[in-house]
Length: 455
Image 1 (cartoon, rainbow, N blue to C red):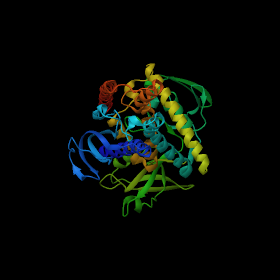
Image 2 (image 1 turned 45 degrees about the vertical axis):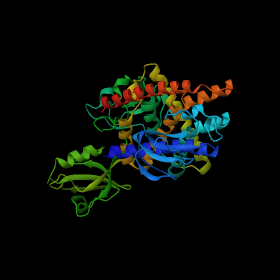
Image 3 (image 1 turned 90 degrees about the horizontal axis):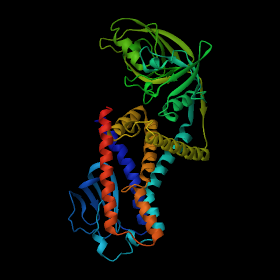
Image 4 (image 1 turned 120 degrees about the vertical axis):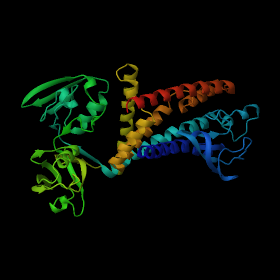
């Protein structure tokens, strides 16, 4: 249910922002917007000034007289704005045999058509820019100043790749890394589809690891839920202590960081839960980091295999560098983030066409979006907004591509008509839209199929 809720929220926000761009631009240019729809297909319910709020379809001969019908439709995989005098996803061509009216899309100058058709993409870019700006301005950046691996679990993907506990990584594919953010980006983003050559320091000796790409997970969380690589300084923290619980009796406090449990060093929340649940009724030693002090306690798990804490993972206690930015600097950094992410997107697309990255790994449909949205939302509002910005940017990039049905396809037709100084026949436009729509549906079906395979 959480997948469905977060998917609906995410898609609803992105579609609304995109379609509002088209809608507002059309209104500002003096065009009629007959329909503002979230979703495709059958009208479930909606509102307009003439009929008010109604369920189901409107009469086929309904004329809004310039009033927009705001509606929710059956298929929640997008949306559209039906602008008078334009061949679009509705395939309505009734206007073709009539004299063009001043309020119609086809009657407006080329520059206005370009503004209206690109406004959705511009709004998606602005949404991403605002979120990136906000992240830089309000949060700044916390950089983990370490490249040392705290733990490599036996049998893990990191173990099979050749990493060992205590390794300090210095470069990846000849690119120097001096903090954990650079290290993660180099492994999971910049080298997508490539094998890795990792140079590291192990017991004061330089070691080179050559790792095939198929040994590296899609992201730093493996399918078992454990981190692929755990940086030195990452532990599990105490987010909350339940009243009258074994943890409160043991004087565990919110904000404590767990260093050792039952005389074993622990890093992930899975390790903590495993040790506690397997020692019901037994007194086990607990070593905590409380601010700058190390505190040793003991705790007895209850009959339910719990000690009454809400775990916070990951909690970092290693060296960090905090960077804060001013208002205008954050605007520039937001723009730079967009440029960087766009470059990475096209780099990834290039690797897909070259066969270095499988299509199913590079593209995700509703299921992947729902999974990612839920994961980021549960990590906090900041993480969710960052995901929303990335998705909004991806939507802008995809939509501006010159493919029928997409905004880029409409833009290409507008430019061709502007250069030729004549309108392409409506039947030809409808044919192009039909072909594009079928191809897009097949592509979506293939992506959905890959989503199911990767569950």
